[in-house]
Length: 118
Length: 120
Image (cartoon, rainbow over all chains, first blue to last red; front, side, top):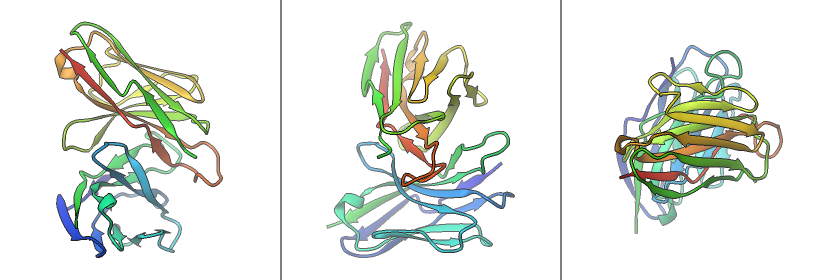
């Protein structure tokens, strides 16, 4: 079974600064997907960024980028130029490849609560 | 694109009654939908996987007869909490997996806004 670990329960960052959220995972699979979702106070889960394990290039989405280290099983999220609207719970998630039992299921970490301070 | 709706957003019911929650993918077809439960300040707990036209697959510890799931079309899945009790009070979230390749990205789950269930 896969496990996802987010070791930082809470973090804070000054507006306009950069922050990095950590995520490690454990799996015996070679092909898989990794995601970061944010859940603001509204509780709507919003996709932030996704990474396919077979791609060596780190994914980027505007101010959000990841540092994907496959051998180390690490998938950190960097938020640049932090904005007040980035305040949310951030969940790292792992998805099994599309075959076998439990396909397409997401395994979530426990989350990191990020507060952006004005 | 990739919009998932959930209805109702909030529901309060008396103990012993049944409550139905709808999850719809509005602008894409979803072969697979998922139902999660989230307790305050905790992560999402997968309850079941719903596949269009077939029986849902429930996670260990989830009562099939209490949480009835129907996935009648490629855009609609429903969760019915039968004979609800106060311990069923929670935040229920659905997600839908994108079926086709394209700008939305393959094998990505998009989430509904959630339903707050309170059982008195």
